[in-house]
View 1: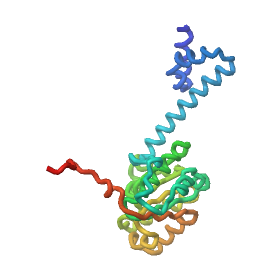
View 2: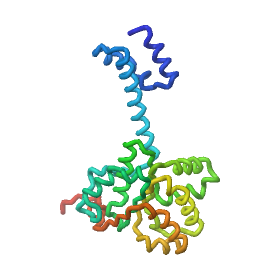
View 3: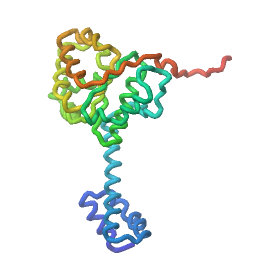
View 4: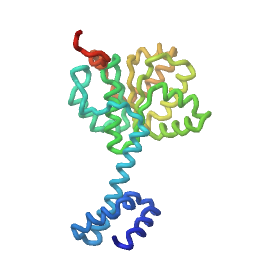
Length: 253
């Protein structure tokens, strides 16, 4: 081993080039096999560092996003719901709507794939380098209540306001009190023009006023969400109920 390798590794670490520092002997061995020119050598060296950083950033984005376990849209079963065909799903997966800061709202009964599709689009976006956060409506409301009281909530709130794509699951599935409803409106009002929102709900927009117990607030909230929005109504039987698990063997005794 060259006498310079330990020094190069220390200098790379000091410069925070962790990919190069941690894999220098392997990189030198791989590069030496092709006898590159000086510029080729530097290109391969720094390309490796960039790839390593991209991988680490994607892992971090996935961790912060908090996606559900099931989020691979390649596994989506169109037989269990209607309202979104393969061509439409593929078009959504191109993410042109995200680049244009459009919103999506998936509405329909429980088990028809709303959350799965939303999380899958979030996963696609993460892999394309976007900042994505997946939160249940209750998580959002808790953050809004506590953001001025606890450092962790303040940090979470700042993170959400910097999102490029925010997925809010189960909106209006339960009644929301007046204070929480107003907080949620202010939050959406501050972000709807700069962040793409994906909303999942089992209530039609007309039913939001009942969940909020405030028709004026519901109208104002929907006005922001639906301004640039594709509303997708899903129908069908519950996938979870059709594929529910059991602890018993299927064999009859």
